[in-house]
Picture 1: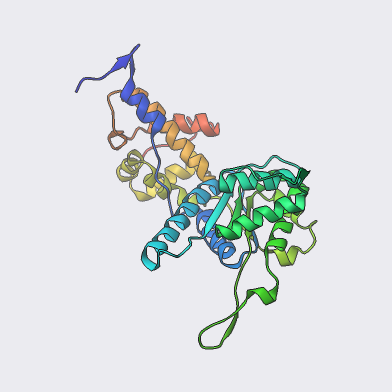
Picture 2: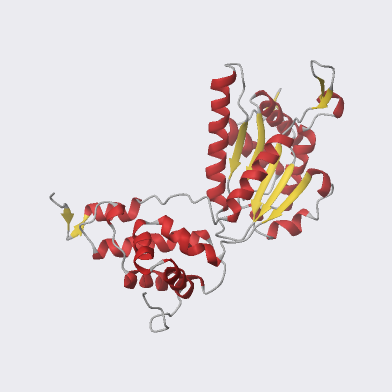
Length: 324
């Protein structure tokens, strides 16, 4: 096969190192399991839940994976149960660097429904409360059950207050929520719009300043980074070349090597492991320019250590890190 190059650069190698997609790992990333549980809680109960984790713990990965999975499951239910089944919807918002509740309602409306809300009524500018009511009414119409806010530590206090008020106003009174089943049993049906805040520990202090903390924000979960003991197995699953290195060294020697070179006995962000993997790919593509498939990358301990040094800045060269 002819290799296409420009200025001596292998284009296939460049594409491989720049566009490689790493697998999503289910084990060893604490935030993934906890986010799935919190998302289900918010969607079912329509209340406020807070998930706190350090930077790099995989929060954004969890949001992308589980919201996509939630939507797919809702579509599956509609296909299997009834064409009249209205799938539940979840709105996901990223960093909200806004300060006014009015801007929040306008932004949520456009994010959820793709259009700007109507801000004027009979030549009069609608109040913030009216914009909030419009958003809630549209959420009920389209079965929006939850708002997931990533990077919640960036929220200003008025926005946290507005999210609390959104849940409070969206929740019908108890009489409207009571329904009687065919066998005459009364049940309280969840209604309204829940909010899941996902951020760092900085969120917690602000929430305690909000009234009704126990009623609206009914649950707070705190998770940590990936444990050092899980890192060797996770790296081996991230890249075939790492699995090759683990097989050549042996399981115990590989675990020792990663402990000495990467974790040093400490928890580690999943983002660091992903960045390390990409750094290795970038360097090994320069060393192995004819490789066109990620499965063909070969293990190279020196390049791995260079990638670690570049990323983490630890001086292990000559510090006792050795291959088995």
